Length: 488
Image (tube, rainbow, N blue to C red; front, side):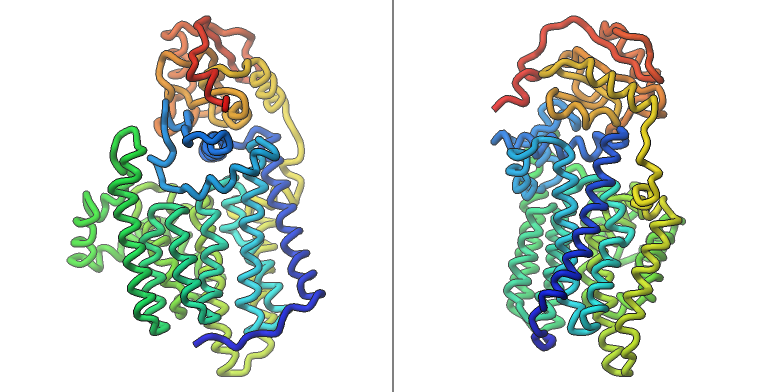
């Protein structure tokens, strides 16, 4: 049932919440800017999204050379919501603008989290909960990753849970439908939203939401993505542990339930993800129906073939953070009402914030913003200076193949792709980084492989190797594909 309408926020309460949001936003932006300054930013994913948004800002299709020649990013994942960022590039067309946008999306999530929590924990408990969310490890992971389309889904999901709590079910349907613009698999998440609507006895709205979600998923994956994809297909079926297709996976899940459950726990990274997601929250989210909203997101990661989807260091967990924390708040609020544990209203969120603070100070692999707070990434190095000199050698309006960490510094004035990913005829410049084991991309080349390829294509070294950075050039006419890429 909906909670009682809480009193309006007072000005001091707004200031307290606003201060937490501002402090978190400053930390997020500082971390993103330092990563960029230190050449820790990468083509995957910052460069990819910069090229896409930059093309939207030019009123063009999101062609992303980092993914390949004439590669329309809508043929990779379906995220037209990225076009909303185009006006920001009219203000400042720099990859770091995405870090600012990401910070805005994440800190805005504190508002629905506070509003959901305040009727249960009071003002202080709600502010502490919002602050803990802003410093929680999934938020730190996506900030460290610098940008991803899932960032749009983070505040939307928090508002969905708030709307459930307020009994505003048509708003739930509308917000859930907007998730289809974030990513194609959000159609399955809409089914989960429909299931929670059933718990609230909203039969028509539940059926409508599930129908929209399934239809949206099928239309996007069967028609829209293949329409834009260079391969003409949707190529993200990566659940071969379950079967070769969605139909085979469903059959496997039904006929082999125990084996399916075993897949969710069959690697140490999966176990770590389970532990970090639920143990700090005392397993409370598992008792809330709102955890259903995160089930498709979490299970799709754990059933995935790719090891990196299991690790709690990427962007994937950000949308789970408000689901998990608000689910815990929901259950704990009921326990407080039942048993009168008044002190828990402050103790529980204080514990969560303390956990995040300790992690940030001492465990930077999971809480990477600690590097910025501690000053570990404030300095520079000779390698950074060498990369700057290499970037400065590249003329504007040319096609260039580059090592991953230099790509974001070239997207604003060149047609830049990863080593070997833009064919053999376009590029007239290359930058190889011999400090890296591999140079980035979907099928990354090793530095010696890239050098052999460069020589085979007629490239010549134009300057001495500088801290392991090699710049090469070949004298060919600049293709109009290169020179016209950033023109209106």
